[in-house]
Amino acid sequence: MNRNQVLPQVELSADLGALRKVDFCAHQAYQGHGFLSMNDLPRVASEASKVGEGDGFRWKLETHFEASPGSEPRQIMNLELQGQIHLVCQRCLKDCSVGLMEKRRFTLVASEDEADAFPMEDDRQEPLVATQQFDVLETMEDEILLSLPLIPKHPEGTCQSHSSSFGSEGDETQVSEKPENPFNILKNMKKTS
Ligand SMILES: [Zn+2]
Image (cartoon, rainbow, N blue to C red; front, top):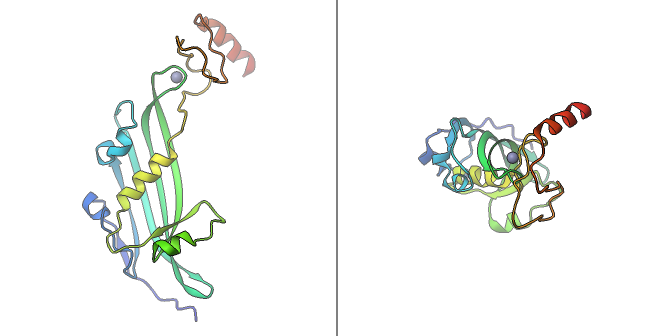
């Protein structure tokens, strides 16, 4: 009943053109890894405050089939993304290097209907509709965009609030009118550590 069919292992090319058309309808397992620079990710790059050296994302991907009771084996895709991007710190309004590390798991389904009916018991396992020319690059870019912090900030205590003429916008940190004496900040940090 459980066909332990050995699937051909296909090395996924890191070439951008190849990543835009991966055949997920073929009965084969993929694995691959590579690096995407900000140039390769225009939608992510448009969120960046600047492009620093080394900014971009390493990706690692593998697919396999898992037995599913009462139905065809399910095709699973595991995707790992790790990298960094420069965003604007919402406290001091200066550049802020943000590191990201995401692990996502997807189930490939045959149709939009099947995706809509997919049980949402686990938000770490989303459905994707398998096609013969699946755009993996787009999925990677989507996932990077989704994992960007909504309010990027330098680590607490390492920068000061930008004194805004618009006044406080409900930020939990107190916006003081005059800049705080950096030596006081240092003293307070030593006390609490
Ligand atoms: Zn800052």
